[in-house]
Image (cartoon, rainbow, N blue to C red; front, side, top):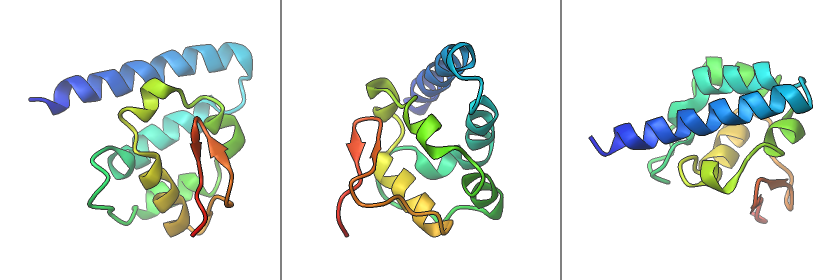
Length: 111
């Protein structure tokens, strides 16, 4: 039952970001919706285990506007979306983040 409030928080945050984002840039709202649909289960806390993403998730990862999406990551989202897993999924999908890249408040560490 504890997962239900967390899921509700994630979805509420994402919907709020989508509304703000559609007013501000109109550019990556479809990317966000596709990521929610295809990749959500691979990036949620807990940090472990890290599960290799599906082909569908990787297909989305390869097409999204990463800087646009990362600009929308808030501290609230970082409470439920594990940024370490986001980096892992991007690597598994052959679209790794560069060292020092910032997504929300998370800065990609050196390997």
